[in-house]
Image (cartoon, rainbow, N blue to C red):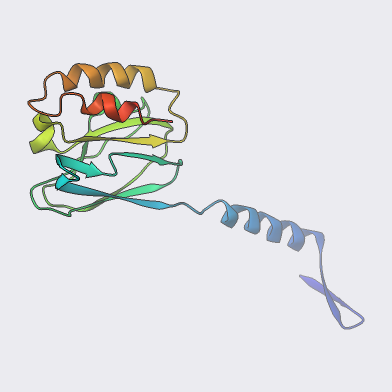
Amino acid sequence: YMKIINGVRIMNKFNILAFTICLFLTGNVYSAQHEVKMLSSHDGQMMVFEPPVINIQPGDTVRWLNANPGHNTASIDSMIPSNAKGWNGKMNEEIVVKFTEQGVYGYKCTPHYILGMVGLVIVGSSDSNFEKVKVLAEEEQSKFATNKNRFSEYFSLVK
C-alpha cells in the first residue's frame, strides 16, 4: 500500500521491492525471432537454407519460411546438444522452434538431405558440442550425392 504524506504518495519498502522484481523479470523476457528460408536454389547453389548458418541466443526462436515448395526442416538428432529437444517439420510447413540449450544444432531438409540441404543453428556458445557435431557432419557429408563439402564450408563460418 502507499502512504500519503503532505499530499504525496509514498511507496513502502514492499511495494518498491515488488516493483523492482517486476522490472527485472520483464527486462529479461525479451527474445528475438530469426528467419531462415527453405530454397530450391539461391546464388547459384541448389537446395539451400538461407542463411545456412545462424547465430542466436538462448531463448530466441527461428522461423523456417517455406519460400519454395517441397521442403521441410528437421533436426539431425545426433547433431544437437545433449539436453536439447529436436524438431521435425512437415513438408511445406513453416515452423517456429525455440532454442534454450547452448551449442551447435545441425538440421536438414529430409527429402533433400542426400543433396546436402543442411544448415546450422549456433545458440550462444558453440563450445559444448562443436567438435562432436563437426566430426559427425563430415562423416555425413561424405554420403551426399552433391554438395559434398557443404557441412565443412558451414563449420568454417562458425564463430
